[in-house]
Length: 113
Ligand SMILES: NC(=O)c1ccc[n+]([C@@H]2O[C@H](COP(=O)([O-])OP(=O)(O)OC[C@H]3O[C@@H](n4cnc5c(N)ncnc54)[C@H](O)[C@@H]3O)[C@@H](O)[C@H]2O)c1
Image (spheres, rainbow, N blue to C red):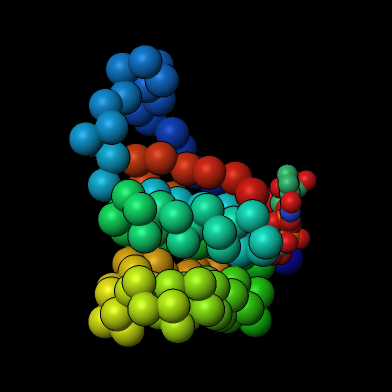
C-alpha cells in the first residue's frame, strides 16, 4: 500500500516566538465545512497564500466551490466585492491531495478534519 512519506519537522518553534509578519504561507488540513471557511478567511482577510489538503480531488473541488459560492453570494452579488477581487482571493487558495506539498512551505498549519 502506498503511504505518504513521513514529514520531518525540523524547526519547531515556541508559539510565542512566531511573529505574525513572518507568516506568509498557510496550510489547512481538510476542505470541509470548517476548512473551506478557514481557508477563505486566511486568503480574504489575511491575504495569505493557502494550501488546502484533503483526501481526493472531488472533496477539494467541493471545498473550493463552496468558497466561490460564499464569496459570490455574500460579497459580489451585494456589490461589496468585484469579481476580480473574488478571483484574487480564490487564486491564493491551492488545493492538493499531497500532504507534504501542503505543509512543507507552510509557516502555520490548521487542522480541520
Ligand atoms: N462544522 C462545525 O460547525 C464545527 C464546529 C466546531 C468544530 N468542528 C470540528 O471541526 C472539524 C471539521 O468539521 P467540518 O464540519 O469541517 O467537517 P467536514 O466533514 O465538513 O469536513 C472534514 C473534512 O476533512 C477531511 N478529512 C478527513 N480525514 C482527513 C485526513 N486524514 N486528511 C485530510 N483530510 C481529511 C474530509 O474528507 C472532509 O472533507 C471536526 O473535528 C469538527 O468536530 C466543526
